[in-house]
Amino acid sequence: MKKIILSCLTILLLVGCSNQDKIDADALLQYELYWNSIINETTYLSSSRNFSIEAEIEKTSEGYEYYVVVDEPKIAMYDVKIMVIENRERFDEFDRMLPSVGIFDARFNMIPNQVRTDKNYREGAVLVRQKLTEPALSIQVMVTWQNYTKLDTFKEFFEFELDYNAQEVVEPDETDEIEETETETDA
Image 1 (cartoon, rainbow, N blue to C red):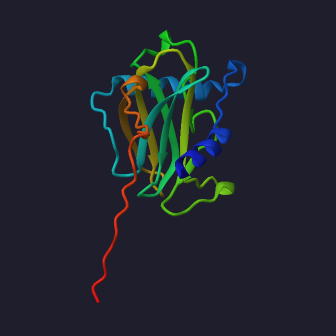
Image 2 (image 1 turned 60 degrees about the vertical axis):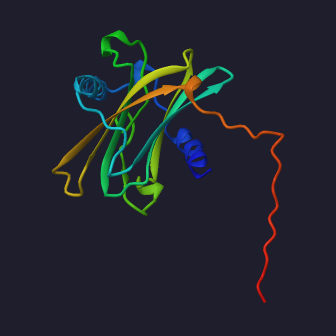
């Protein structure tokens, strides 16, 4: 439940700019460089020892949408940037912006047990892509940050295979009865 609330609040804060006229040329160049960096990566992780990361796909009235949640930092992370691409597609073959944070908007910091949104210290970030027509895709995620001195930069690359149809949906069985157990006390 905490992640859903965090997701809703962060979605409102992290709505990306889709108007090409408003995009800074330097930020667009950095976006393209990061995109190519993700594609050229050969080793992808599924989890991190520095923070929590997870990805999910859900069905909506308009198709499908996926969420990438990066939160619960275990180390101090400054100037965090996160970017998602899909199906390892090349930058020049894709006609829209994909979810990112910290590239076109203000970077933020993630420090364990420190949340102060007015100073850009956040618990995490949620990146969302809506209105997908296919229930399955592969996403690649890059998370980059700096240490306190801002002298060292770290990057981690992740890959998730998302398939709505393969998700296990657990529904309660109406025929199941709740068994009551009696406890006996020894006197």
